[in-house]
Length: 292
Image 1 (cartoon, rainbow, N blue to C red):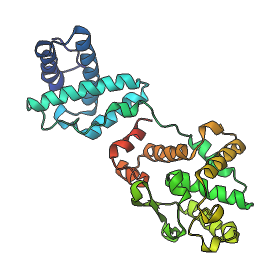
Image 2: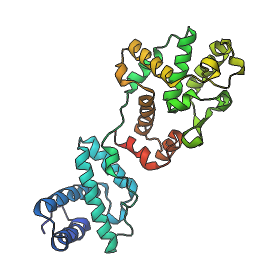
Image 3: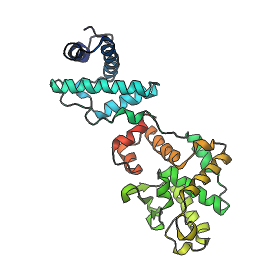
């Protein structure tokens, strides 16, 4: 079967590996012509990418595949097409590994592409900045809302984690806090000095003046000795969005968490570090931010 290759001397990918796999699909699997053409197109595009990167098929690891799918997404390729390309690469490398043409199959731990079909919503850096500047920090409520928003964005905590954050979990002089996440698992999350100062100002000011605050373990005490409710946090963010001129429908605690993670990845933060800060059990969950 004839395979289109990049200009210049064809690499082993185009000279041997891709034709071998396409013949396998045509002869042994009996794939229809349209399916064969889809495989050829997706795998040719990946081969061109490898040639541009100076990589051979045997050099491909999981990280290279993730970068490739992120590149497709940045080009506006639809989730459905990415799913098809994933299927093609999975079949290709499984075949090459079985034929001992590559040392290992790099797609074995690849996350199912259906996870990527709905990408998280997020705010631009400019919208986040406007949101964080919106609270009137000269008022008790404004200072509380400022501390909440800073923690949601600067630390990427979930709204439930924010609401139940204890004073004893804060280590502001050392630049971190201990967050209890899903399954009561604890993780250490760094906090920027600027955000830590706003939280410290809330603690020393309006919080200390609240009735019963001295005996309350919560950073944000609510009514009846309980922590602040998630609904209160939601409503506070919506009010800040309206004041900042940001669409309230686009703002929520989870959107700030997504924005935190995406902006970190966009700034070339280590994906494992982002995984730890977010409290994801699997790195595959964090990898969605490479496709935003």
